[in-house]
Length: 322
Image (tube, rainbow, N blue to C red):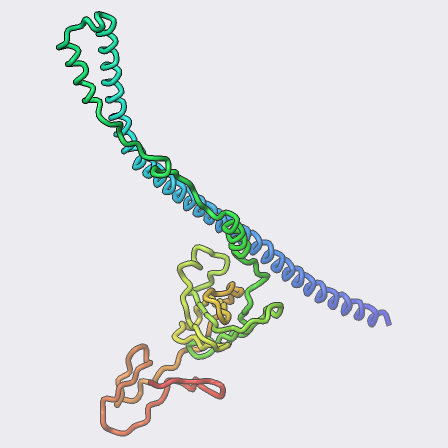
C-alpha cells in the first residue's frame, strides 16, 4: 500500500512537472506576443513621426517657396508700376524748379524797377513764358497698378484638413497572412489567406516577397534583401530554385480593387526545404547533363530512357519540363 502511494505521488509530481513545463512554454509564448506588440507599436510610432515630420517639412518648404514667389511677383509689379511714375515725377520736379526760378526772376524785375525796367529785359522775360509749355500728363488712379492678393482660404482650408485627415492608417495586422509553407524538392509551396474580416473588400492581387536568410527584426536588411517572388490573384505560389537547408524569409500583402497602393505586410515567415531539387541521373551516356544536373541534352540518336538521380516525386508533387 505504501509503495502504491509513493508511486502515485511520483506520477503526480511528474505530471505536475510536465504541466509546469507547458506553463513555462505558454509564458514564453505570451512574452513573445507581448514583445511583438511592444516592438511593432514602437516601430509604428517611429514611422508615424518620421512620415509626418517629412510631410510637415515638405509642406512648409512648399508654402514658403510659394510665398516667396508671390512676394517676388508683387514686388515686380510694384517696380513696373513705379518706373513710369518716377520718370513723370522727375519731369514735374524739373519743370517746377524751372518755373520757380522764372517766378523769382519776375519778382526781382518788379522789385528792382518795375515798369522802368528796360524794354529789352521785359521782352526777354515775357518771351520765356512760352517755354513753360503744357502740364505733363499724369495717369489717373484707374490707370495705375492697384495690387491685391486673392486666395480662396475658405475652400482651401477644408480641403487641406480633409486631405490631412486621410493621411495614413494604422492596421492591427496585415490583412493577408501566410498560413502554410510546404517543403518541395528545391522549392517551397507558400500559401496565404485574408484574415482581416472587419473590412470586406475585393482583393485584386497578392504580392509575395522573399529574402535570403532570416531577416526578421533587421530593418536594414529588409529594405534591400526582399524581392518579388509572385504578383497575381492566386492564394499560393511555388517558389522554385531554392537551396536546400538555407532559410528564406517570406512576407505577403494585397491590393484591393480600385486602389493602386499595397496593404501592410504580413508577419514574416521563415522556412526552408530539406528536399534536394530535381536532377537527372548521370548514368545515361546518351545525354549530356549540365546546369547542376537540371539540363539534359541528347547527344546520340540511340533510343534510351533517362532517369532522375533518385525517386524524388510522388502524389501531390508537380514537375515542369521545358
